[in-house]
Length: 106
Image (cartoon, helix red, strand yellow):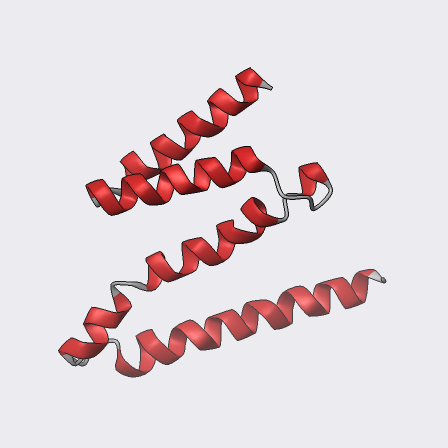
């Protein structure tokens, strides 16, 4: 791939990202949003994080795409603590502790 193509893709993605954000902030940023939309926007982070983490748990590159039981156990611990404590930091810490223990035991 030539340098011109790479720079074109970078500039195109930057412009697309800017337009998507501007559509919310520039067009409707100073207007009050309805409560139902605000309620749904609160869950954006909760919806994005599993989409980012699921491939790393189910098909990790470090195992060649094979399922790793320790990663599944760490994900289960994270979900369990999140459901129990309703705290993101405690949930992430629980998953990290389980994954760290797995690294020490293996």
